[in-house]
Amino acid sequence: NAGVTQTPKFRILKIGQSMTLQCTQDMNHNYMYWYRQDPGMGLKLIYYSVGAGITDKGEVPNGYNVSRSTTEDFPLRLELAAPSQTSVYFCATRGGGTGNQPQHFGDGTRLSIL
Amino acid sequence: DAKTTQPNSMESNEEEPVHLPCNHSTISGTDYIHWYRQLPSQGPEYVIHGLTSNVNNRMASLAIAEDRKSSTLILHRATLRDAAVYYCILRAGAGGTSYGKLTFGQGTILTVHP
Image 1 (cartoon, each protein chain N blue to C red):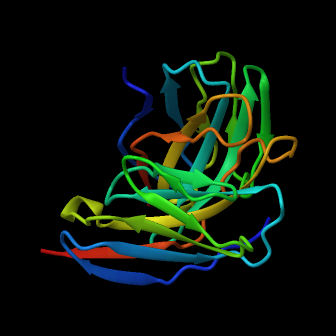
Image 2: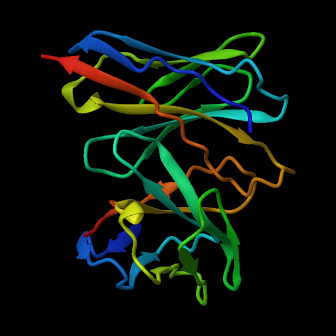
């Protein structure tokens, strides 16, 4: 049981390049989330999804796009990478029901934009 | 979102109990108190949550003040593996529109000495 799998683990991009951060879960959870974490700070929500085909913006969505075509996958797309997007990115999932099911996090993708 | 206030850092010795405080004076009646921790170079990990009554699980105990304006996470016997950043987070209960989103503060850095 892998839980939440994020790929790649590390990546260096040049300014203006684009890339997709992958997140896959095998827990059959409806809710999925993308966060970013800057050094010494807490996590900030980028986008979230409440089920396949449904996504919405979080606190810091500018410069990112998401899609949710299946329950398992929730990729995060950076179209024009900027130095301000250097961060660690975490994907998380949560089961349904009340808002108190815990979130399960992946190990993160460490992204540097140079 | 209701905010939480935690000390920036705390220290403990191995095998001693640790009490991590959290103030949340603007908590609403339906907000649950959640605790997550983040070990170095890992994603956050769920620890415990509660509403009004004290809660225990295999990882920790959560003591909630009678007026719910503060809470304390208790690690009964700290180990070196418990060294992490601990986040106290308020989350809306059922019926809210938060979709289980988590708002992270900066948390408390716990150092455990051998």
